[in-house]
Amino acid sequence: MSYDDNNIFAKILRGEIPCDKIYEDKYVLSFYDVNPQKKIHALIIPKGKYVDLDDFNENASKEEIYGLMKGISLVSNRLNISSKNGKGYRAISNISENGGQEVLHLHFHLIGGEKVGKMVEK
Ligand code: DGP
Image (cartoon, rainbow, N blue to C red; front, side):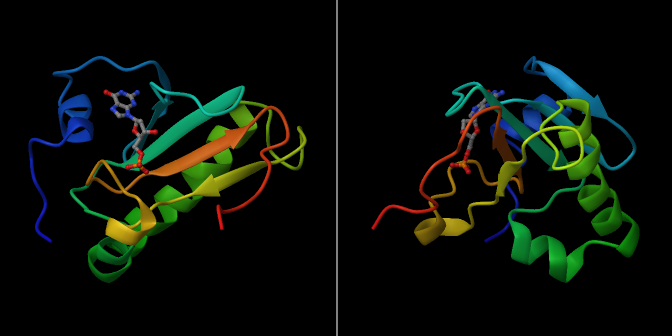
């Protein structure tokens, strides 16, 4: 699937739609999910135009991949949910139709602040 510049996260990246920002650097933007599933529900997205994790791993530079992976732990530390300074969290990336992806710009959900519960529905 090709990248659609009109997806909601592209609009957030361009500043056309506001977000509750947690962290930003050259490679990533992190903000709170508009529809939190647990006490803490953050999103982290790469600044580059990637539809999903497969697209990212295939086409992103090493720096972008490193930046996103590092960014996840940076944000978890900032939110005090990491295994080091909190009680842990779940990092999820939904991919395409069977994964239940709604917004077609790669993102990881960082969910924590309390027990997250069952990993998947049966
Ligand atoms: P997914 O199903 O993995 O594509 O999750 C998309 C998430 O994005 C969903 O949890 C709700 C969140 N979301 C959708 N629109 C907005 C928005 O405009 N702002 C913020 N902060 N989150 C949004």
